Length: 147
View 1 (cartoon, rainbow, N blue to C red):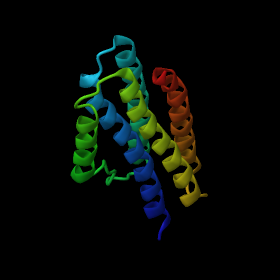
View 2 (view 1 turned 90 degrees about the vertical axis):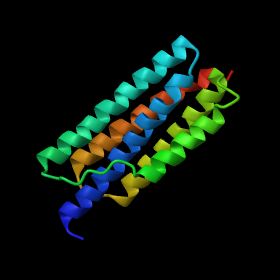
View 3 (view 1 turned 135 degrees about the vertical axis):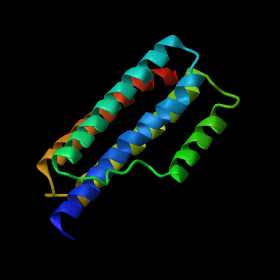
View 4 (view 1 turned 180 degrees about the vertical axis):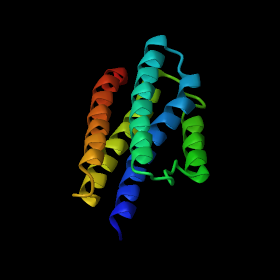
C-alpha cells in the first residue's frame, strides 16, 4: 500500500472516531433533562468538533479528498441504540453510562489505531493523542454522574 493510502486510512480512522462521538451527542442531547449534564455534553461535542476540523484541515493540506464519515448503516445503528436505551430511562445515570461506554470504546479505538498505523504520520499521531487524552478527560467528567 502506498504512503498516501496509509495516511488516508489512518486519517479516516481518527475522523470516524470523532464523528461517532459528535453524532452520539447529537442524538442524546435532546433527551438530557439536566442542564449541567447538557452543558457538559455540549462542551464535549465542541471538543470533538475541533478534533474533526483538525482532521479536515489535515486532509485539505495533504490534498486528501476522500475523508469519510461513518456510513448511514452505522449512523442508523447508533441512533437506534440511543433511542432504545433512553426510551424509558432518561436519567443522568443512564445517559452517563451510555456516554462512558462510547468514550471507553473511543479510547480502545485510539489505542488500536495507534498500533495499526505506527510510523505513518507524526502529525496524525499528534491528533490521535489529543483525541485519546480528550476521551480520557471526558471519562473522568462523566464518572460522577453514575452515583
